[in-house]
Image 1: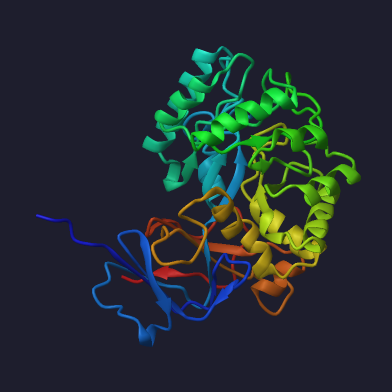
Image 2 (image 1 turned 180 degrees about the horizontal axis):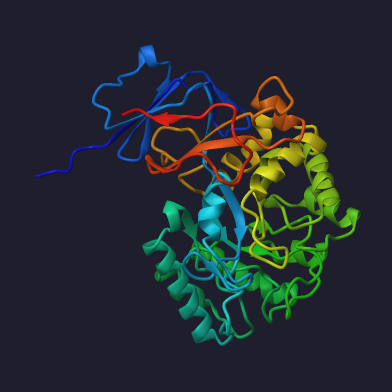
Length: 391
């Protein structure tokens, strides 16, 4: 006996945002997902909508891939001891984020720094977020902070156990580029993606990571290139943009002027495909449920980027940089979506123009794996129109 396939039909879509910089808007007014994966999209009259198990009437609003936060610091479950806050992940879902990527579980009280302990915690973190998804959000966790004394076998052990991420280089005892590079190369050899802290110190034990160390270390992602919190001098940011093929990660908790500098430099270098977004929370600045949306609006408004392309920084760019099956409207990708519209009474003739003017959209619904996870957002301004599930 087999389970009956699930079929989601989203009809009456006003705008389909693809997540792809090269083609940020798809034609169509309907999308179909089967068993939690995108099957087809286009115009309803051309699609097979029969046999749907769930029908969503988008009511003319925009459909966008679920947003990705490329830089978070989770600990366990939906709780952060850094701010003593419960349900911060659920709250972030109401900001349109359906996938989060850990840059290290650094706020765990008593975080072990011996090699056996740090490996154990990374494996445990990977497991508990694999087994428990707060409000359905995909939290990709288990990102060990490297410490002096680690050897190649440690990275093989981590990879064999399912760990795929390395916490921010520079938050542990490894402070020199030569040692860090060796560990990054071991990690890469075993399929573990790396990120480096960039800028001034953020937590006790961290320190300044300048452009020279970033370049020497050669991580896959330049973590918070606009500082987390304190940015590097402009010439060093420009240097990194010029010389790095890695992800250029701009975060909410960094320097906003440096964020715009990074964006403008990347544009001049034809490297907008390397721009990805994170919040770098929870942190001293707190939790930012709307942080990714705010970065999209800020970069569009002050960085002179069309909103449909700025949204790609938080979706398809991150998906491609990090080899994820989310963040893009493509056949076979996870059916993770945000349905949103211009906020009530906001300026701009439509949602994209309103975002371009620096305004947040209103979120009416999130969908993860083809399942409705939230309806009208409790955090964004109210949307002009709301999608609804058809009875």
